[in-house]
Image (cartoon, rainbow over all chains, first blue to last red; front, side, top):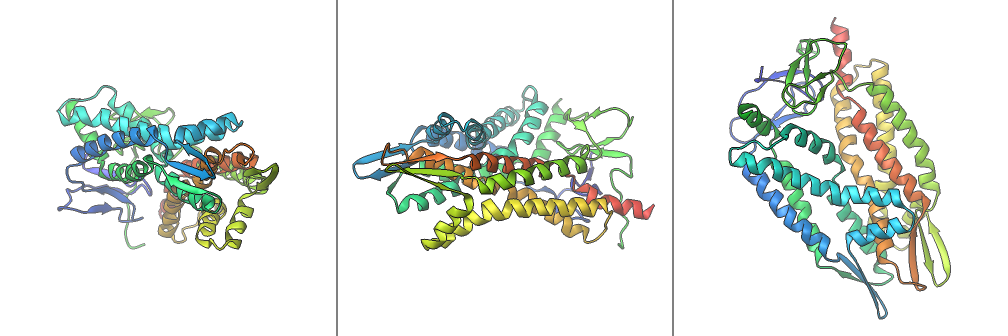
Length: 200
Length: 210
């Protein structure tokens, strides 16, 4: 049974063969990607998760943008921005921004770390299926890359009004986006489920 | 079609939504759990068409106040000026920053509308049991799923503006009620895309063959 797999977009059953070297397997009917060959998935994903966590701490500890009008300088971190929205009575929007730019990316990285580190050393983390299922639901709400475009648009919008000073954490944000994307791409969930089944 | 395809459903199997394990269908009347990952098994997403319709209609309703009500209010030297999404786009066009105007127009006005229309098209074509260009319709769904998150750009812009432009009497920016409705549109359309089951596009195929 484990050599069979149904396409998640059109339900056609395929028999699964090992891919020759690099490449991806596509559904023969609808063309959806069934699975991809990923080299050193465990190690790479783990490395990206660790790098991402460090960048995340940096990105959220320092201001990412500053603005100067006359002698007045104002800097902002992501958290102060969310707090400002909350104070203004836009609680729902504040929570939405908090989830999509802080909580979801953080959960994504912490879950990866929690699952992959023990697996790397041949152990099975407790409640692995539950953590992976949770991760699957959180993933669509992690929107770091969209936030970056938001920063870009804001900078252009304010450029005519005041002098914009890029903050220290702007670069951490930029790096974090690439690391998060790389982490998502290098993760091979089939491999994790296989390992879970073997060691259970 | 020159090929005969065997689907999981026709083989009395269910593919787990989370870990993609093929499981036996078993007793139809009650919910089964995936033996490997413990997720609830569904042959198709439950009530996919009704749920997606409901969410699409709700999003359409919220789309109106999202575009009519102000999304930001700038208070500068005692004067207040409110901006809707569209007036922001027009402002950028007038000041010659058309790339930004284009980004906001695409992300905030065009993509949400396109997404809703695409879902409606997919829903109607499924309800009419159409077998027209199924591969392209699946591709359309894949696009809808990927593209939706980019509508959040405007919400993030509002957050950044509110945080940064806070200079007392000189200039302060407040978020307007439009932002709330717009946020709702983005979240609801994302849920709509998630509740839609692309396998329904292909199910007519089996009915035709039987």
